[in-house]
Image 1 (spheres, rainbow, N blue to C red):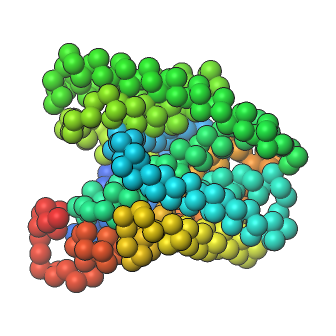
Image 2: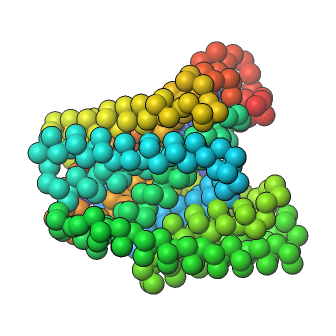
Length: 416
């Protein structure tokens, strides 16, 4: 893609850093203004700026993502998934096993619905399998960011984040295993299961090592120490770099590390303020990267129609499965419905899987990306708004459309 603005400067690391510095500053400012004047999540502002950057060719935003951009995306995903995993207590499943049943049913039904719909459109089996796996994963990043911006809190919030974390775990396990057979549509179920178990096993091993090292660090360092923040970021980054070299998945290993750490360190713990700032910058960068990549899709009538079909069947599958499994899950039908609506967002994990499919097979990956990229952009923007509505309709956050414009930004951010 042409880079008209960037071409006015010599292409050097310094000019690229300048573009990214200005772009992130603009994204942060626009996100703040979006929340201040519309009381909607800041992520909508980040995504809009990223989409404009990708469309105009700013900051070396060229698909497929590679090099430093890919590493920064993976690091942002790793930090986000670690936090999501650390919020998921496994004891919850012992007290309420229907949560796990809901998760499995929602993921399986989403995969099946996406597979059948895309096959009905005439797509090839390898392409359909990859897209169905990508469609499984909701976005914990979008959910947690919206919850943070709107101060969401309650059973719908907790259930939505838990289910998004679990279906991301399934998608990463299956997707990473599928990379080895992406060119073959005749892969047997046994072969797929063996590959998935291998990926999960290696990732679990590295996740356990990460959790053990962090648990040891917490015994030596003060939780709010700046040194603790540096150690956490360094170990998360190291795990993300090493795990793929041994056949594991970097984001999956970090996610499992967060889940295991929660079991070793069950007491409530707060991220150090320094890590929170670093994580916030990585989050903004991640959302800008995702939308700048996704906007570069081929928005032809056929591709857009396929993306809309995928979004529609995915939404119906997630909402329908949660309504069907709501009995005994501790949630009323109304709450289950809004949890399903909160499962709409797709973002960084979906983009990462799409990029990995492109790298594994150019022919199949190009067809996957053609449909996945517009799907990701639409669901990221639409999904953030739907999550806001879901939290407001269930009384777990403010109702943004009823806010008074005279309130200050500080009031909007402090009020739960």
